Image (cartoon, rainbow, N blue to C red; front, top):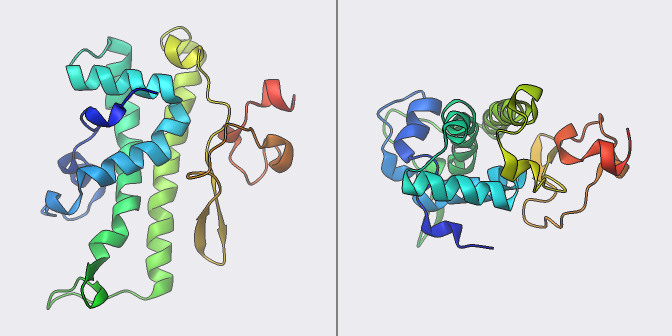
Length: 206
């Protein structure tokens, strides 16, 4: 696999703030480049597959995006990625690690929300990211786009990460243990596990 980390991120901190933050004056410094890379690796690369993700990274970095890839990035991928970045950065914005331990970031006009409100807020952020991600994948796989993304079509990812919720907590089932094995035989193509996580036609024929 090529070193995709050497390329610029697919969105900037300023774009994340503009698209997903209520307070447009939020300091972009709070959203590090590493956090954006993390969101790309955890949420976008598994959807697109290594080859197509790498193609977009290289073309975006070099300013050589094809017309089709540029439209995908502008109208679909950027929205999904920005919401995933917000999801990943929430903890860092709310809290700070110091020599005294983990402390909440507060000013004199702020108060910490309780755990239930915080979890609901984070889940809602993830829900919005998933809506945009589903829309992106529907666009890529749509009949009208057939042949526009040959790198994706010729290198379909075998399995995609998903999440499940238990007692209000969000859990990840394969972001860090992705093994390329489709799970639709276990979860069912149209069950709680998102349909994007399996190739139903070739894997379980459903």
